[in-house]
Image: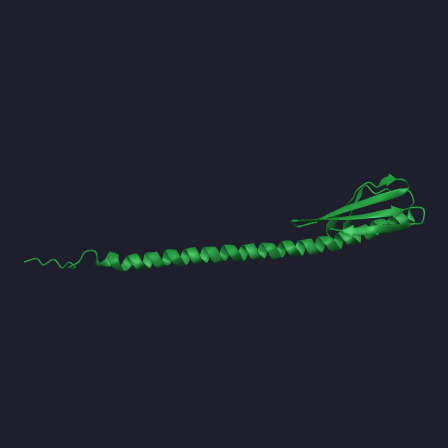
Length: 132
């Protein structure tokens, strides 16, 4: 005689497995959501640091450009200089009524900063220095 042992309820294994699948799915959704928020926060912090650094470098570039202009009366910009490992683009000066508009730009990571100043060659003074 051959006895075949089978569980009385064939679906009892499925009933136990279903809550485990549901809980695993919920846990996966929560982990993915938290991970995305964490990565987003890291990106925002990185962008803020890049912006802060680009502002500092743009200010330094603008001051170097003004110093070079004061020393060399024929200097008119239109060049790229290195400040640390970053490039500062000095745009050609725009002269109007004996006053020169000086503009520089610096890119650090995903952040770009601009620097502007107005230079008066007659008294070698500058004003409206701004970095943004």
